[in-house]
Image 1 (cartoon, rainbow, N blue to C red):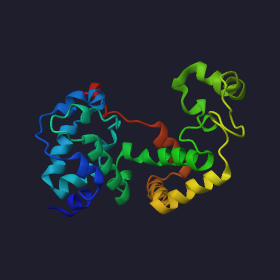
Image 2 (tube, one colour):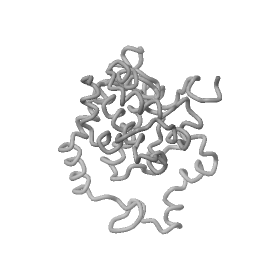
Image 3 (cartoon, rainbow, N blue to C red):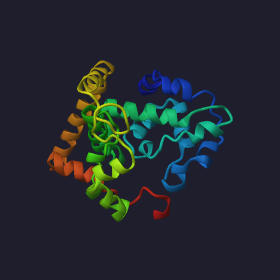
Length: 233
């Protein structure tokens, strides 16, 4: 048994998600990501079961482990009740822990994702927050969303939301004491440490690529090279 596999097997998601895989391929057949990406969860399960450190390290440094959408369709169809999606979560976690996520284009997207989503949670108490979901960053959302972002308060008032208001209601302002408690949860559970490590590794990669952090953020957030999709052969 390799050291990487041993470390990976300590993750509860592997304990719960990798039982008796018979390599039937049902997970790949049902996987929405596999329909579009060059991605085969069956092969990933096979590699993990091989306990081969060299192959597992390749996975941890690859784009492949970041294609999964974590929809868990695989769990609902597996005849042996395995959870390839759970194993993928464990692989991503170990990749982040080792700092190897910066080795792949899709892995590097962990930086903007971490920065935006955890920033929203810690600053506003919401995973996705209207004020930070800029149309300029999501032009594919079209002119309707552009108009909506320009009239947030009026639109939310019409819909009955308590946008940035006190008391109960959708999109209410979260009290500072609750935000402080969220921060303490991040501190105690290792979330803050992980955020700082992702930043540290990303900063190092940005320097290697000759970019400042703003350039690196935009690059990782906006750029997708060819070679990821099935129809690009």
